[in-house]
Length: 243
Image (cartoon, rainbow, N blue to C red; front, side, top):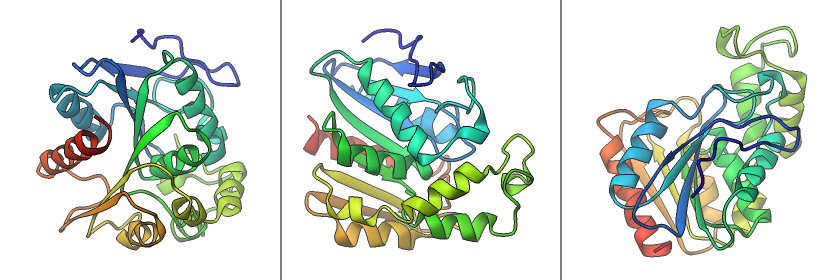
């Protein structure tokens, strides 16, 4: 694998990435974050380190406008991040067997990308956002787009483009029903950001092979105590369906 130091999206913005080498040289697990996140969130770092220790090379990415990547946060949408992910895929050597693991909105990005891009051969979603319109209305319904911020964070302005994009997609259920790759869905029962009902709805319509893991009492971003369980589940899924 290359150093991934010069990944650029369709707009020419550099996408920050960190690579964790592993023994399985012809495979790669790409890890994508959720809205307001970045590649250095504790969950993604723990997953990359844990999976790489089990032989699975991992690439953590910050979508454009997040973390140390170039671009504006106000431009971040699911649609743009699908394009960003495809730009990452474009940098990989031919024949690389790719699994994508996405958290929260990054899960929605993965589902919609896997549906249209056959380079993703295996899918994992963690607290994956499914009902995108409902999420936007529930979390930001009282915020004025282009004036207010997400969760009162001034570094994360709520843009009209973001609102319109989540409403346009409405949900990822149609993509879930048409999914053609093995899919592991992991969700905490106490998630108060993306309810576990989102993953349950996607799992209900997705074809086999699929697996659903509910982690009792866990919240949206998981925690140190549950990281080993999540890592073990992903490693077992990859071994069964991506080896």
